Image 1 (cartoon, rainbow, N blue to C red):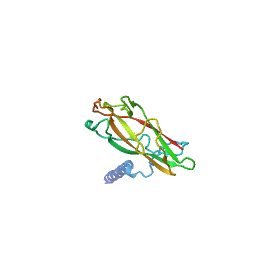
Image 2 (image 1 turned 135 degrees about the horizontal axis):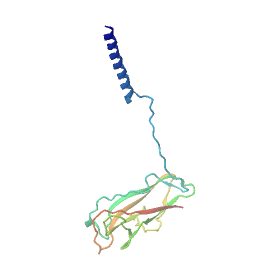
Image 3 (image 1 turned 45 degrees about the vertical axis):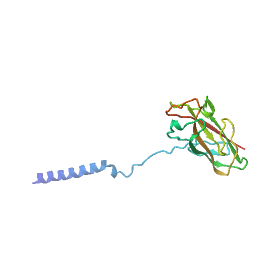
Image 4 (image 1 turned 30 degrees about the vertical axis):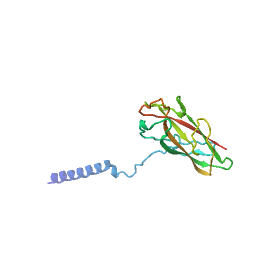
Length: 185
């Protein structure tokens, strides 16, 4: 009889030990394990009247799909409005801004347009209209825009245009880059 009690006690003890051991491996029962991570900061300190808001370098312009048949040397297609967004402007001494736009590459057949620099599309280029409604001349400053303290927006419009009457546009993907510089006075 003592052997049956001892054997029974061993079975009960083993069952409790196994349950306790299994509970110890259950991650929901862990309450003292910390969660760790990192916060990464980036930015740039500038000696300028204003700074660019985050996400403004580069400014992304998406034209979508433009049918080749809509492209003519006189028609601006895919007209897309965007802004150069500025932050932290201090107009204590300088109250105006001009923008100078320069393409990474001019279109040889029509230097008024920026060339497609990658992709297989051809026969068209990209142009800009400044905040004052005038066509941008690459390398020349736009008319001045007034600044206020704090945040400012300088609007522009981008478009795609056929480079010449005697050039037939070729369908395909394209990319281009136009750099800008903001001067204050």
